[in-house]
Length: 317
Ligand code: GRG
Image 1 (cartoon, rainbow, N blue to C red):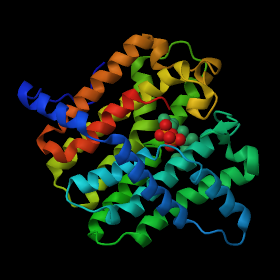
Image 2: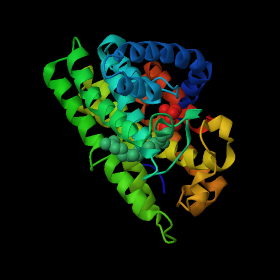
Image 3: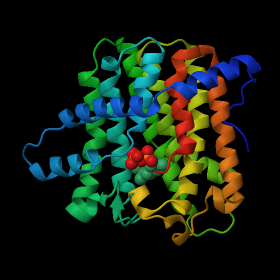
């Protein structure tokens, strides 16, 4: 395998300059600051009113932590392309609402049947299956309302494109389609890399791509820039999932905030089951290198995205 879209190699000199800058970039500080901004915006986004139970259930999963990678990617690409944090924050929150609702539904007994998520009991374990389904539905619908009502300073036609992009990432063309094939493949012995790639480019990749590209879309980036960021996103999206599969085997319950080793128990085809752990890590690293190479024309402005790409392969949760 290699790369959603390969890019030409950069000259060695500019590569080493970029990697020196990337080494000096304070990713931890950057992520902490962005996470705090996202947490605060998410906290303010949902008020508990009557009927309290549903708002509490929505807030329970939305405020349960998590890396906040999707909103941070959206904010980063908006800034990279000349926009501001403020104009992207409502879309960033909407992305996290959509991601959270997909986790709530994914954890249901009819799907992956998980008891823990983000280090806490899953939504249905606390509120029951009926409310968990509705909390997911509530978050999904509210995500679109939220970005439509709260986005300021963005050209309306750009905002409409973002709405369409997010809808496409969630629908049968994205998360839903990926989840259907994933469910179909459970227990099957003969899954190919092509099928596995289909599952993950849809289940995981589609929303990560929407997160990356929507930030730039809000800032009215040109088509060439959007195309470059799409390539970056496709490469990190696949790398993210390969690393996720590896972590399911190598990380602990505490590190993951959920039950480790579930893929093996559920007899799921994963990248390590097809390639082994070492080759999976190598493939993920290759994808991350390809993602970083796409960003070279952006110079130092792309340091946050370069550092996030590296974080994807180095993370433990
Ligand atoms: C979207 C309408 C609709 C229905 C949902 C259940 C489902 C259809 C799709 C499953 C999507 C899913 C759960 C994909 C897995 C994506 C993934 C790798 C999740 C883990 O993401 P992290 O590591 O988690 O970013 P945190 O907790 O850090 O946010």
